[in-house]
Image (cartoon, rainbow, N blue to C red; front, side):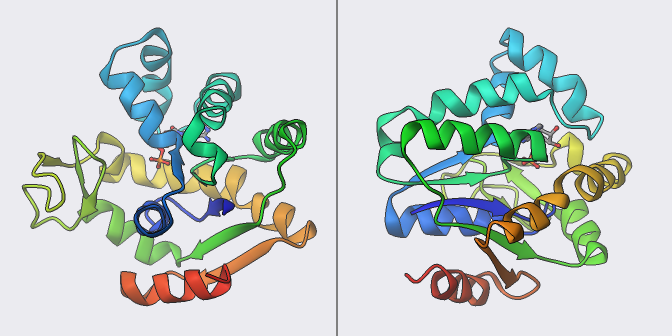
Length: 208
Ligand code: AMP
């Protein structure tokens, strides 16, 4: 399985990716998680990335592309991978195509988890994320049900940043739907349903 996940922030890409990883043992490559780890570690990249993330903007392509190339080269990604949150614009998609071609790999599909923007705003503002493993849940969760880590509200899930992230998505990331549609590998599932129902469709559409 070698796929790209598309969809607005909060559409449920990470949740579906986690389910696929648990069942099919492929690598989950989430650029948001990689960047948050860099911010936490206060690496040079993390310090640069933080200002963009806090502003709801995309981190510059060269920083993110380096992270993804490194991650794609690791052993676990050779079996298969789910790219979650990458590519985020057509420049990144073009670099990814070139990188995969060089590795002799073809994408099986680009899976769009489709959710209307009013639903997204509600979801993001009530979302809590595990500081340790990235698991997401509703506002009632204070302890992670998966690893018992602390659940917190991401700075960029606060109302003032949500609007900016959605605007960034509409302008820069949504064009990828057409990009992968044009390549004939776009798969679409309705993400505005219970997680397990969405997952049934995801597996069906991926032929799993
Ligand atoms: P996410 O967890 O995917 O919602 O990402 C959180 C933030 O990390 C985004 O709002 C961006 O600032 C940054 N980010 C994640 N992935 C990328 C990417 N592929 N390109 C640029 N910035 C990214």
